[in-house]
Image (cartoon, rainbow, N blue to C red; front, top):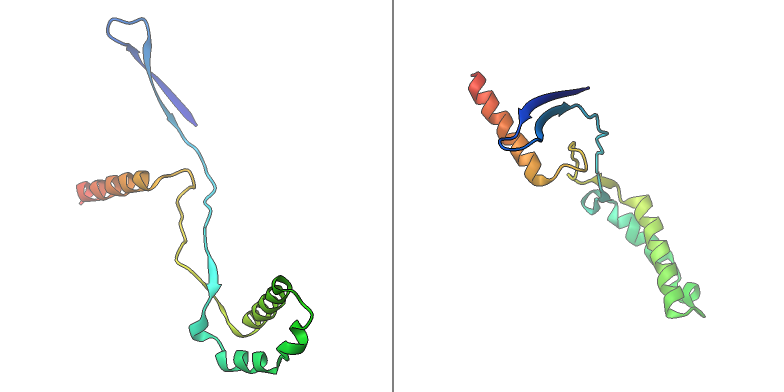
Length: 118
């Protein structure tokens, strides 16, 4: 929906001032980062599984980079098995194009409007 209003010419100019109102619907992206929640994990089982691995046999004949990759993969697999995921508080309902400053202005205007209506 677009509403355009001609406000008339600028003083001393042949240009007109226009005012318009435009309604735009945007998709809200909810940003949510997941991470491991070690405080709720089964650390004892994780340690038990790690101690059962014969690292000498597993990493024998591998380069440092290959050993690191094997170790990291094993650890990530065990983390998935024994450590639950948690979501961080990075949720936002603002459109991606809206800056922090704009959010503050909108919040202030809402508060002022609410105060006026009381």
